[in-house]
Image (tube, rainbow, N blue to C red; front, side, top):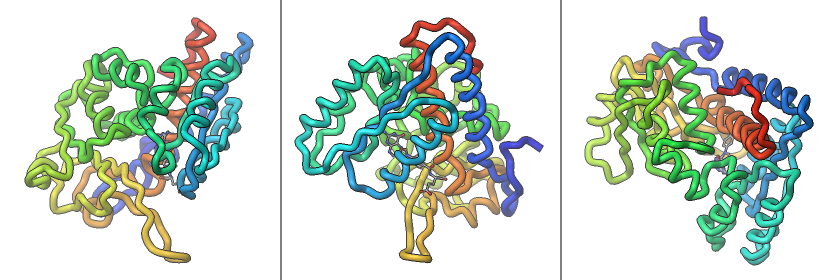
Length: 307
Ligand SMILES: Nc1nc2c(c(=O)[nH]1)N[C@@H](CN(C=O)c1ccc(C(=O)N[C@@H](CCC(=O)O)C(=O)O)cc1)CN2
């Protein structure tokens, strides 16, 4: 059995994001060793200007991942009361710092800070999140440099789950800059793990079920718990749930996705769980982008084995 697939849930195979992410981290660690042999140590800076507990958790997890694979990480925290100019100055310092290959500004930023303005200040060669307009443009025009980490993770999960992406009918539910739009472009582009026919649906789409029921692949990234359920899916569908919604309080608090897992797993061919699906892949792809950034900046011409 493919190691990306856990036990079945209902009818569906469960796509194990933790297992695939662990395999990505292993190949990143090997790439870091190869860079070490030529005197290059990749460095990632995380910048947090928010007191959102989930964002604090994600940044901590990213630092832990870096330590595991041998990437140097530096964390900069900016007071939520500070002026935006302090954030912008920090980004510019990191742009100029030769020890830093990748810069990640954790989203969302605290209310009132102009997020697009902050993301535009990141040097596009250090933009391991792929959010700078230059990198967005490169993805859209079929010449990607850094692709946002969640779409990259979704693409890898589909491949590991045995989905033949070329020729697939993919429905993406959600049109965010973070996931929906870059994922649609990534799968639409020409290439081995692309060449899909992509429909992007959103909150104003008429008859969402009609679109979803025709899809071979359904990716839900809408931030609406349970938006897609089993009744909407075809029996051959592969379902990727990008949603991470915290529900309940205290001991009852848990994370659920945008897909109604119970009913969807009775119908679909394969499905990702929440937690343990796309989230770990987002972090793993950040490591991969950071190592690529380090190799690019050091102009190292060796095979990193990262495809
Ligand atoms: N600058 C960025 N900001 C944000 C991004 C991003 O890619 N770049 N994505 C999301 C949040 N995110 C990364 O930062 C992220 C979300 C979830 C996980 C994750 O590992 N989730 C686990 C559960 C973790 C938990 O217990 O809370 C899982 O799903 O299994 C990692 C990263 C928004 N902001």
